[in-house]
Image 1 (cartoon, rainbow, N blue to C red):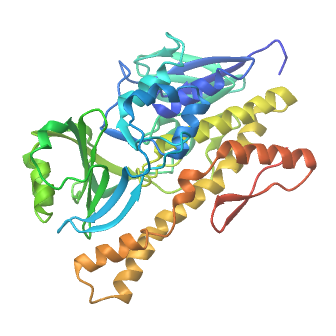
Image 2 (image 1 turned 120 degrees about the vertical axis):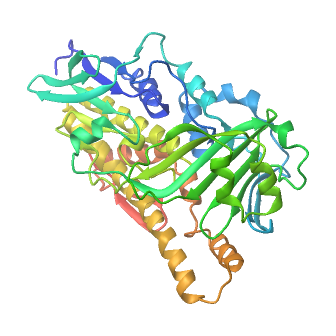
Image 3 (image 1 turned 180 degrees about the vertical axis):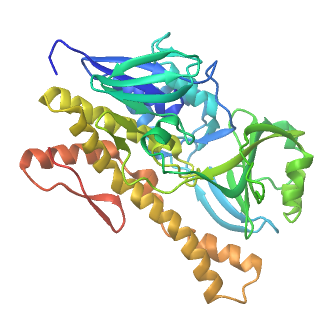
Length: 435
């Protein structure tokens, strides 16, 4: 590519992953950036979102972390962070207290719109083109052309980044054989005023998961006087029509799924008159998240993990960081964008493989507990599963520092070493691509 010619980059989707990609690619010299979002207006659908240690690191990296301090109250080490309880009787199974480290978030949950607004504050106004719903992609010799529902087309682009979420059109084009499927579970979420549940005794003053054998409920009194509730219910879909995402439903459609829970939970669920319903979809791991040397996927578009770890935004932030760094290196070194995408793909693949292995581990652990302890009651089963950490220690997921691993990869390349990366996950050694 000529030094005088700018790299034309298109980002499809302006959710958290797309916004992170914008922020990082704005820092890459010699890039002409275009952004397309299907929605008519930028707004988040959902309730709360987790701000874990890893997410916090990336918010600092993108220069927006300070915008969250006003919503947090830092503790002295005695402030409860998260509890696990038996949902049927309320019995405490485990508890962890918040860290006082200023480099970790003071509170694990905020409303999703606050995350979006913080990221938007670092994006130039007018850059994001709204109401541009992607319907097709055309690859040609001079680049990739995007075709939209409104009849317009844009391009050609040297690089298209699919950040268009779990129902990604970009992924459907690049990998037409990859299919999503309904997991058999539906989530109901809502944020209400804290005073609405203040009369209910025994509500934990921090994040709490209330477990039963097949489902769980999450409650959290947020620092700003709000109260979050998030649930999962097992709901078969015999007709194959389950597609709801952020659909408003009445209380009557929700509470019946949780009649076996303890009185505290039943009273909490009885408060909201309306809920948001989310049918949970997922899909198998893609062996590759790049296509044709010009298309790359990130976040939920690249690996639809069905929200299993509560860290989807962070995974997308990691993707955006690595992709921007790989492209930046290619531009500086005069190498091809196709090679940069291959580097991005091979760098991130081991981490996602490890995440999918954890999901497989969840299922194996549950089956092992059932087979080895056939006489366990439902309450004993719940305690056994929670005590096992569902599938072992997943702390590494939230402590993983992709910026450090990327730098180690560069240092190894400069030294001519093979770049073995042992910090992706316990027991998972991944070869980082050398230059």
